[in-house]
Image (cartoon, rainbow, N blue to C red; front, side, top):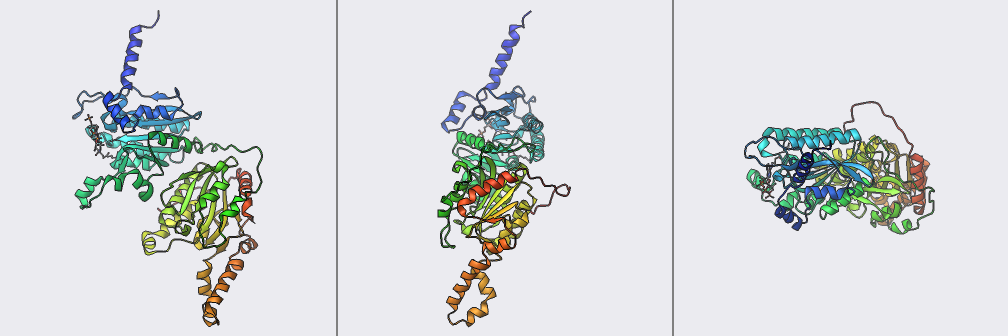
Length: 517
Ligand code: HXC
C-alpha cells in the first residue's frame, strides 16, 4: 500500500511554512537596504543544494508574556551544515524577521546542538549574528541560552575555527559570543555591535555619543579592534568567509590546506632589492615585501585597519599555508605598541592552534615610547608577543630586514624565542638599541672631547651600524641561520618551510600557560 498522500502533502505544507519567515514587504525592505534574509545568507554561503538543515521544525512552544500564539518559524535561527569549496562547514543564521532574531530557549538549543555537531564532526562554524539579543519573553531561559552558547564557544576554541559575521544588531551580552570566536567580519550595511548603546551611555554617564562612534563596523575595525574584517554588504562578508576558510584546516587535528608546488622555485626575486631604501631611516611599505614573498601576491590581511604598525595575515608560499607577521615601517616606524602587540599575539596563537607555520618579517626600532604606553601597560601587552611566540610550536621562520633592536628583537621571534631559522639581510641591524642612542650612551665623553663632536658622533654611528650591529656579528655569535641577499628571500623561506613542516615539539604537560592578559 503506497504512503498516504495526505501525510506527504502535510509535510510539504509544513516545510513551505517554515521557509517563510517574514512578510514579503519586510523581505523587500531588507533587500532595499542591501540586506539578505537569514536563509539567503546560508544559501549564498554554500554550494547550491548542499545545505542540510537541522531542526527546521523546532519552535518555541509556550505562550509566554506577550508572545501569544505568534508563530516563530525555525525559532528564529537557521542551522545546519553545507559544502563550501567541497568541504563541510556548519553555519547558523539568526533571522531578524522572526521576533527580531531574539534568542530564546529553543533558538539557543539549536545553536548549541550545531556547535556540538561541529565539535564532533571537526568542521568550522560560521555564525551570522542578526538579533535583538535575549528574547525578553523567555526571561532567564534566554540568559541561560546565551550562557550555554558562550560555554561552547570556549569548548570549541582551538578545536574548530569559529567565524562570526555581524550582519545586523548585536547588542549587550550577545556581543560576547562573536567576541569568543576566532574572527569577526562586520558589514557596513545595518550592523551594529555594542554593550551599552548611546542612550544607556547618556543615562549612565551623561556622555553624548552616536552609534557610528561606538558600534559601527568602522569604529570596531579601526579603534576598538573588535572586528577583523569589514565587508561592504552580506555578499562581500560571505566572500571573506570563503577566502579565510581557504587557508584554514577543518579542525586542530588535520593539516591546513597546503598545496605544495611539486618543485621548489629557487630563483631570485630582484624586486626585494628595490624595496629597501638606501637610507636606513627612510620608511618602506612592508606590504611590498609580503607581495614579493607570497604566491601571486595573494595576501589576506587580518585587522587591516587597526594597530597598523604591525601587519598580520594569511598567504601561501610555494603552496604552504603561512601566517605572516611583519613590522610596518610606514606606521610609527614599525614600533610595537599596546594594540600592535595584542594584534600580533592573538594572530600567532591562532596560527599555532591550527598548525599554520609563521613567517616573521622584522624591521623594528623597539617598543613605542610614551607616557600613555607605559601607563597603559605596554609591559603587560608587549609580554603577550614574547609569550605567544615562545609558546608556539609550529614552524617559525624569521627574516630580519633592517632594525631589530632590544626587547623588540626578541619579541619579533628571535632564535631564542624558538625560531627554527632566522635569515638576515645585509641591511640588518641587530643590537640592544639604535645606533644614535647607543653611541650617545657609550661614547658620551669621546664625543664631547672631540674637535668636531658632530663629526665624531656621525662616524661612531656609522661604525656602530656597519660593524657592531651588523648581521655578521649576529652570525658570528651563531644567532642567525644565514645572511642572504634580499632577492633570495622567497627561495630561502620556501625551503625553510618545506624543511620544517615535519616539526614536532613537546613541552612539559600543564593545564595551560598564564599569558599576561
Ligand atoms: C523579543 C524582540 C527583541 C527581544 C526585538 N524584538 N528585540 N523580541 N526580545 N530582545 C522584536 C520586536 O518586538 C519586533 O517584533 C521585532 O523584533 C523587530 O524589532 P523592532 O524593534 O521593530 O526593529 P528595529 O526598529 O529594527 O530595532 C531593532 C532593535 C530593537 C534595535 C534590535 O528591537 C531593540 O532595541 N531590541 C531590544 C534590544 C535589547 O535591548 N535586547 C536585550 C539586550 S541584552 P514585532 O512583532 O513588532 O515585529 C541581552 C542580554 C544578553 O541580550 C545577555 C547574555 C549574557
